[in-house]
Length: 124
Image (tube, rainbow, N blue to C red; front, side, top):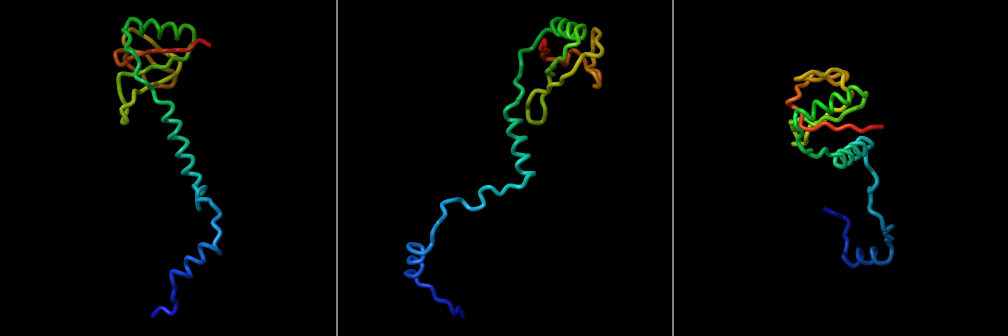
């Protein structure tokens, strides 16, 4: 048997006169550091989503790649492929090798020109 007996009158009396709420949500700031890192990564990813760019002709792609290679510019290449989240795949780097059918970025595998959707670079 329960030897304690509570009446609603005693409970109401306690909350009306004795208990002082500090006015803050309990446990609000308790996040694990791994959780905060994951949240920051997700926010960064959401802000920096690659947009599908307009397709360029093979002639324009070759011209831009050759110009970037000649002047040692870093390029951003958007491929005609999507990742598992249906976002366009982009690779960046300097052009190390270029011929009529394929190219290679520094320290990356060779890629076919026909797989490129768009080439962009910034002149510093």
